[in-house]
Amino acid sequence: MWSFISSLASPKKFFYLSNKLLPWLTVLFLLLFGYGIAGGLIFAPADYLQGDGFRILYVHVPCAFLSLFVYTVMAAAAVSSLVFRLKLAFLVIRHSAPLGAGFTLLALLTGSLWGKPMWGTWWIWDARLTSQLILLFLYIGIILFQAANSQKKSGERATAILILVGFVDIPIIHYSVYWWNTLHQGATLKLFAPSTIDASMLYPLLAMIAAFLIYYAIVLLLRMRYELIATQANHHWLQDKKS
Amino acid sequence: MTALLHFFHMGGYGWYVWPAYGSVLTFLVAHWFFPWRRWKNYLHQQNREAS
Image (tube, rainbow over all chains, first blue to last red; front, side, top):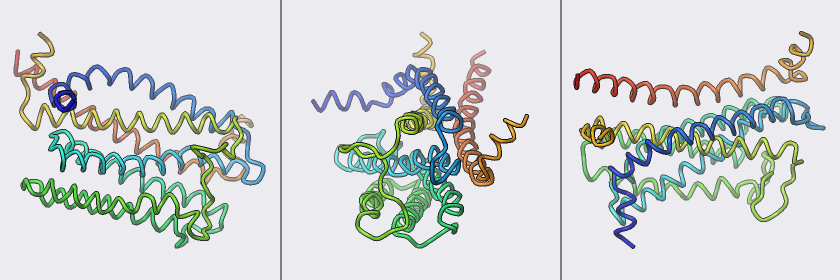
């Protein structure tokens, strides 16, 4: 079992797999993103209360979802790097952190643009918004910590521990709308209960979330592939691929 | 033309909707384009060195 896991996590195998996957993922992303954008901006009917302002949902929700998802992936990679000492795990952390920070910033920005016309304010120290802001600070802290310790082997271990400590913020963000009386609405999409959104609005939203997940995979593969080949001097893998 | 203006107006929410979409699209394009261009430059350089 262990040999199977370690063979999957082999950098060389990862490189070949990423080369095969990238074109397919790109096509899938473009299809889902095209459907999601067209559905969200054109085909979904205006909300009865929020009018066309609700269309921010189609970029806000995927960004917010990805901000949590990327951190969860980083936490899983941190466990893998600490327990199994997988070489690829730290690369996942290093290249996920800027993307996660970007999605978190965008979730806050688009949320603010949605909040102004609906709540009458750009920002409020609401439990959901504040815990999301803390997540942004966590991402920034991890990026800075990595930059400061990039030459030290112990830095990788310390970064992994920092990520696992910060993971406590993820359930707080998710449950903040239930634990506290907040201005932010509760979850629209539920895993074990019917969604409180009409199908005409739901399907483009699901397509956008799927597209953003695939986008994350594409950019992560692009960044990790470059690091494995160019900065870690594995140029010969390119020749192996051609032969 | 009127239909297009109506679409961009977004029922009076255009000033909020379009910056939201614009910022997200800019981020998505930038984070895809720069690693892709770096990889292409690297491959180009490798091919030049090999030939």
